[in-house]
Structure formats: structure tokens, C-alpha cells
Length: 147
Image 1 (cartoon, rainbow, N blue to C red):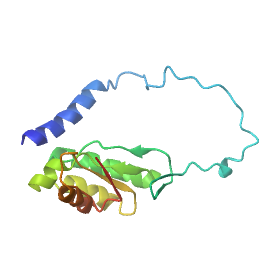
Image 2: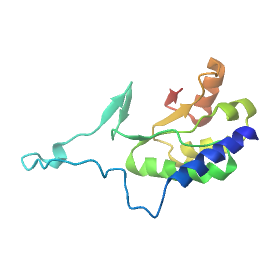
Image 3: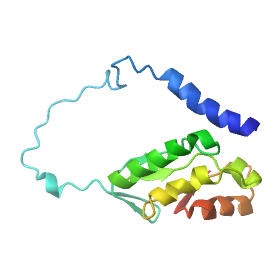
Image 4: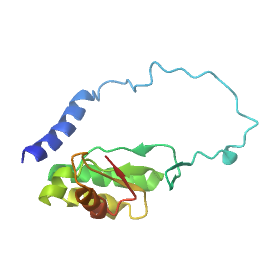
């Protein structure tokens, strides 16, 4: 239960840090110099990239955020839907506790259910054994593993 509470605390702390009344975006100190790209055909621009042998259609991905507590299942569901619609890869939160206890697996498997063809990263602690790492990958039919 302690591990599950920590998972919920991570989300609560992130929400408390985010001041929804603020209009700050985090880009306030970033300035772009105008550089007209009119000679470039936007259709000729390819932003796809690769990580190992994985072809990513966009150069950003949804990194490990949550899982492992029933109250966060919808967060992973919604992130998986966003990943599916945008073509972004997605990593789930640490599966270490769930691999050990086999509870709340649905808070991770929902990612593959909502994004069956997307690139999904499993996530496990460096303390995990190779067998536990393999279980994390199998749990969500992951394409890759974050440690």
C-alpha cells in the first residue's frame, strides 16, 4: 500500500506544482529569431527519428509518468490515446511494484489496449532482476524497456 500511495503522491505533487491560474507556459524565456523558410516545402520536412531499431514518427515521446494505483488508470488511458492520435511513443511509470505484487496490472495494460500499434516502453527499477524486467515487457507487450 505504501508504494501505491507514493504513486498517488507523485500525481498530487505534480498537480500542486502546476498553477492552472498562471498563463506561464515555461517558454517565457525562449525567443526565436525569425528565419523565413519560404523556399522549403513543408511537405519535404521529415521529423521522424529512430531510437535503436524503433522508427518514431515524431522526435518527442510521453515519458514515464504513472501507473500502479487504480486512481491513475485513466491518466494512462488518456496519455495512450494522445500517443495513438499523435504517433508519439509512450513510456509507462515504473512497473517494479506491480511486477512484484501482480496488483494493478490494468493501470499499465490499458496503455497497450488504447494504443495497440504504438511504440510503448516498459519501465522497471535498476533493482529488478532480468526476469522481472522481462515480466514488465511482457505485461504491456512493450517495444522497449526503460530502466
